[in-house]
Image (cartoon, rainbow, N blue to C red):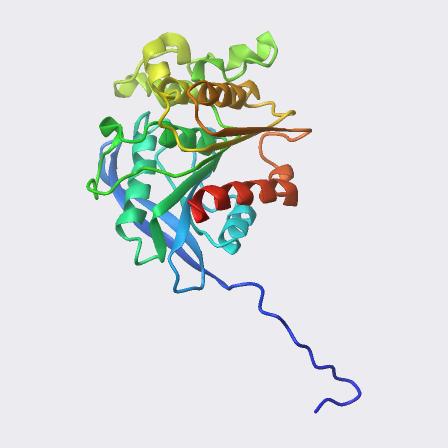
Length: 301
């Protein structure tokens, strides 16, 4: 019975609680003389006994860091929408070079598929999403499915295929990152110290090549998502901001056009006034578009 200061509230149950498991070791890999660097992932998942589709989330970091703790608001939104969401760390330049980071991404997907029951995952429905360097790696994972040369590590009997890709302002051609910018700005991307040069060429003192990204055009091309696009790609959602001053908006547009030429399902949004990262990418309209895409291609696959 309520008194004059109290009020009985009847609350409909419209949200599930989200569980969080941090620092799950998904691989041990070699790096710069160390044979067993530990790679970890953080998992968010709705409290349920049902098997749910999963989304592997890859944070950016200019090729030189990969903080799996980043983009928490977007990852929480994805988890609350009914997806197991796994944010991963991966090897970065200058202590690693391509294709090692892609190998890490594929190892994470295989790990989740191998232990799908442990994490309430429907192993037949796994998507991938990333921003900046993470968007680039997500795109690479989507266009290199069933490429044995990128499958390294454990659980090799499990597939690293994905059913859908969300690429937020990622790169598609490493030699043209600044193509929409001034000539002066473009020159900064071609220096030996540029992150993309270290990503592909490594460090000369440790067996890499000394020079900018263009010093070895074939190696750069081998690291480009554009080089692998064929008719087998999964559905893509690509987004880029009109005010991105780090990665040219042309990068995602070119990948979108290449996917369409091969007959693939690709959707592209250019977001007015959005920069490279920042608050635009957690706004409700952006989140709604991402969740709608994931629901169509994962929940209803």
